[in-house]
Length: 252
Image (cartoon, rainbow, N blue to C red; front, side):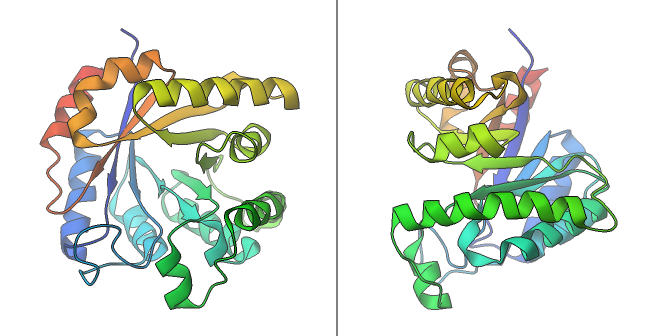
């Protein structure tokens, strides 16, 4: 069986900032390939009024606290920040991390974030159009910033919409993330390959990541067969990383 990469997404809800910092330090020490948070303003499950923390502030702290793992948001909501500003924030976190930052981005979907923070929720098509407009702006701003990122600062696009999201991934991304089950991931992976052929992108230049629940860890081989090369386990507080440690052992 081929080697694969292992990451963890630490959900920034329910626990404390100290809990999160302890978890990403532990993940980095155990040799994880990537560590992620998400980009929302409120809990996505459980108690809607539970503790919750802003993603990019956490990422700056994660960049300083870790040494080895790549880091990023799975995924940034395009609607929440001006694209030029987002590029500058990403570049700065990349410099803090000495070149380990990944700009994960998607069109956004969680309506409570929009309504309570005063963003225009619009519609799914309008949010996708906005993402398509932002991506070239981000790419151009990254080229202009001084100093430049210290890493290659890849763009990861999250989502599985076949008509727009996967086309944007083929055009702009160096990484792509979706979800299971394996047969779903395999089907979307094939569509991404088709879009790569249409737009003239070498499909091998796009790293394929999949976000899985802890109870899916036993399906890791099926996800590799489906085309994934990087498995990211989604973990909530109190951040038990023992199952991820087992997956990491299988990956080597």
